[in-house]
Amino acid sequence: MGFVLQISGIFIVLPIILSFINNETSATIALFIAAMIFLTLGFSLNAFCERRELSYKLSCSLIVLIFILLTVIGAIPYMYINISNGGIIQNISDSIFESASGFTTTGFSVIPNISAVPESILFYRGLTQFIGGIGIVLVLLAFFYPEAKLQDFARGMGFSKDQKIKKTFILIILIYSAYTIIMVIMSYLLGYHDIVKGIAFVFSAISTGGFAPVGDITSIATRFPMNAILVICMVLGASNFFIIAGLFKRRFKEFFQSETSVFLVMGIFAISIAVIFFGLSADVAVFHIVSAMTNSGFSYVSVAQFTDGLKFFLIFLMLVGGASFSTAGGIKIFRFVLMIKTIRKAVYESITEREYKVKLFGKEYTDAGIIQAAMVVLLMISLVFFSAFIVSSYGFQPVDSLFETTSAVATTGLSTGIISPSLAIELKWLFVVLMLLGRVEVLAFLIMISRTKEK
Image: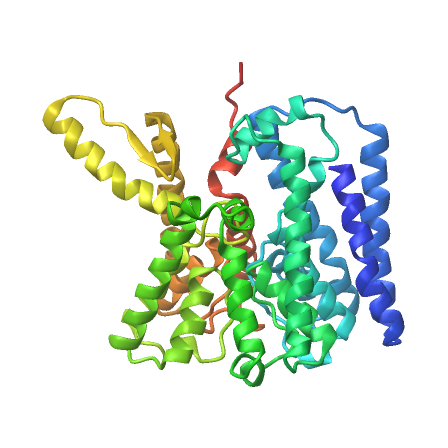
């Protein structure tokens, strides 16, 4: 944890440099304070705490606690410049909300006036998504623990025990950084010459975050080249990293038998449905369906004006989410397909009273694995509906409330307008909790607080 905080502090050097270039004194001070707290606390934990082997339960605890720490410390720059222009309670609540939204790659925002925020703070805001989105926490742990001690951690994150975890983590950070550099260069060569905003947009899209460095993205998201760049980045971010990396090694068979191919086919069908049945134009349908499916949350039309039918359709897409081992949220494609295949298993075993083995994307699932996947799906759906009930009790429409809570739990960021600077403070804190639980998944939190002891 200490090492993670130290590296997070080093990352903030980038927006600090930008604040010096732009002569943004208040932003420089705010970012410097956050960086020093990250580095000081990180050094203290790293130097004075005993290093122990991670069990499965401790791995889940570590993931949850790190995201909480990142959120709290990462809110300091927003607090310092007072993004809400309000009192102490409102300033703290809005800052925590904005920080949680960034690190969880949700993309909700309660900043009343984006244009009034220093450019370096907006750049930092986009960087928090990149850190949270690529799972920088997991990447850094690879440098900290020997291979043998990472096995329980790997099991907690869905790795198989025979994978080279350290090499995989290093490859992840390099590939996602390469994605970012290539896409920024492409956007510049194709005509978008605002480098800082271009980097912020790519950060946001690759991490499926949804934060925009401008108040109104209509002129950017509807024009070439950024409309195409954003769609490509969102798809890359929501695709299984291993499958995309495998394409460079000509593993085309794995691609066509993976959840990424299912994701792309679902995308084509979803876009067709949005055009044929809901009357969206092709360009609007492509951008917003991809935004919902990848849990990115970019939007340049009013979601509030959509019909209830289209909102429910988007709720389904957001809840399913992207591929496993991607920056997207949701229950993931593999769990969605697994639940469908489990129906056949239940029918077969009920009739024949013989065991039916479920195989999916080259992996055979045990009954325990199926139950765990089903529990994640059930817990997330329950959390969405229970939270929607609370939100609707404040006078919001039930469908809009369900849309908003789904967007939070799936870390999407699409909004019907409920999320706003004027939202009740207690609801802002509710959404902070939903975003954090959505990022780490509810089951990991329950494992952390469980009193059950491991062998």
